[in-house]
Each structure stands twice: as structure tokens, then as C-alpha cells.
Length: 187
Image 1 (cartoon, one colour):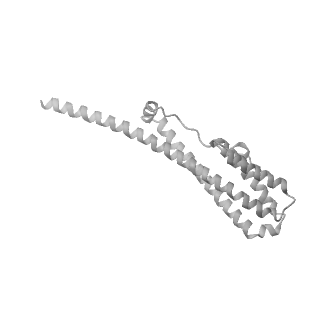
Image 2 (cartoon, one colour):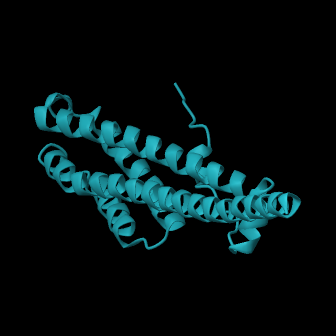
């Protein structure tokens, strides 16, 4: 009788450990997926904040550089593409285009000392720099979340539970080639 009780307790303990493992891994995958969704949402929020600053920047620059319509149109067009982008890859690419267009605006300011000294322009430039930092941090956090998730999916025993729950590796947020290219500096 005592041996039967011990075997029963051991079997119950093993079953309990297995049930706890199933629950733990299921919940862990859900938490990690939610973290990925949240971090992606944060990137989107920062990209939209940057896009919302563009009209103010354009209006400030227009007063000083009326004949530079091509550069301003490029910024406006890049902003429209960003706001219309539907998936992560397209938003990142559109964000890169907008960032390049904004660089043109700031380079333009070098030709207009009054614009460069304008308080509103300086404030917008500072806000955009702050948003760029936040975007970079959000991208890093997103990729860190992907790394943690992918580690759970690939490493034993997580891979067993990932297969059981149909969880697959997720793709990192990649920077487009044109942004990775080293800019040419000529004197």
C-alpha cells in the first residue's frame, strides 16, 4: 500500500510538472508576442510623430526658401508614402525615405542663415532629432523582443512547445540598404 501511494504521488508530480510546463510555455509565447506587437506599435507611433512635424517644418522653411520647391515637395511626397504604408517593411522603407528628404531640408538651412537661426526651425530640428533617437531605440527594442522570442522557439525544450503551439520564428526589422550605405563626404 505504501509503495502504491508513493508511485501514485510520483506520477501525480510528473503530470503536474508537465501541465505546468505546457501552461508556462504557452503563456511565455503569448507574452513575447504581445511585447513584439507593442514594440512595433511604438515604432509606428514615433514614425507618425515625425510625419506630423513635417508640415510645421515645411511651413517654417517656405518663408525663407521659396524657390526650393523641389526639396519641399520631396519631403511632402515622402511623408505621404509613410502615412500610406501598411506593413512594417514598407513603413521602415518609407521612414528611411522621409529621413533622407529631411536631411535635404536641414542641408538647405545651411544656405539660409536666418532660417538656421530661426527659433521655430531650431525647435523643430531638436524635436525631430529626439524622435529619431526614439525611433532608433524602438527598433532596437523590437529586435531585442524578436531575439528573445526566436530563442524560445529555437532552443530546447521551447522548440517542442513552439511546434506544438504552431509558433514560428519571426523576422527582425532590417534597415534598407540605402540607409546602411556610408555617405560620401567630399571637400
